[in-house]
Image 1: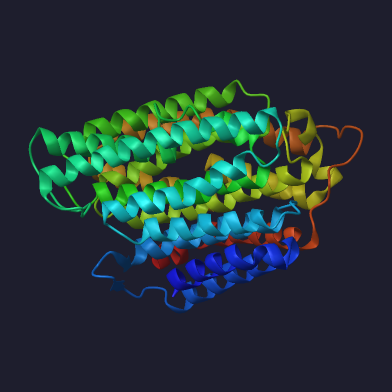
Image 2: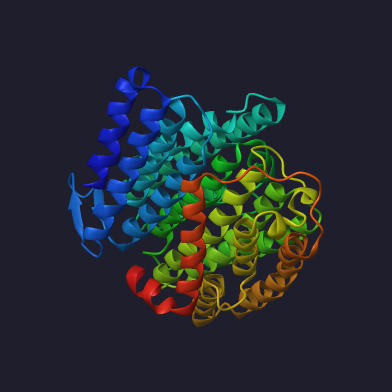
Length: 435
């Protein structure tokens, strides 16, 4: 049903949006997201396939679709644009992510990859200033290169296996080359080093609510594709290559974040490190629930942080703008503090359990070196996360006050804050849902 709901609503709004206007299109898009969440709740745990197996519903599809709908819905609630194309493009993004999470066919994966990427290229430039143009251009050029690499990998995969099924096994140098190209293209989407160079500039230059979607829903889409490509087969030699990407990501992301002076850019470097932590779950065939749980925890914490940053500014947010936030707006200060603590992995927030679960999966797979490195770099990340926490809680507020969240957005901040605490206190509930 979600395929028809998201695809049908996107098509209808494409045809009628110009006549309805921005307010009604935004409302229709929010209702579509709400309907998708309701259908997801009513059908959770169900398994189905359609179109000759090209489309399938399982726990992976449902968990990634949940992250996509929540991320896009959050962005819609925070958006300030008065143009009807804005919510429409976000809806297409959700549709593309749902499709990429619900197929193992490499050609459909490519189509879905472009379906959610093309709207984001336009949304990254939405502010129509120099930083927005830079963000959009870098994202578009590198995204086009990643799509070309992915397409070439698909061609080699078909030559090696005779199938477009991502789960088809093969042997020989042609098969190895195909997986190398496909892995490289998907590593770009999740921002694993050395395919991460677009991330800081694009997050900083894009509207803050679009940065939220990129950091949460888009990252989830990339990991959904990685699950389809990597987990069904024994990693073998790919374990070494994946380990190098993870090690570089957690080191580069955390060390890069230490040098930042702007909050959105810091969260961009943080997202690189977080991608490395999430990828640890790929070492275990039983790691999918842990990976899905981590993505939900990351959505809540990062979504909270970006929601609050969007109220402060739709552009850059230097650290000075966060000083004394708790005293200027207690809800915003509390929400941002909880987000930082969860990203750090401090109990009883859900981020602690998310890291614990992926670390356990990697340890059970025998990747002790990577687990130790992840623990060390997590300690490094505590410095810059707690630094922001200190600015929010212990610094004197500057002159002026940030823009207040709308009543609806404040409700989502309350909800995100409550879920961070509830899933931290009772993580078994969330893990059982995605397991």
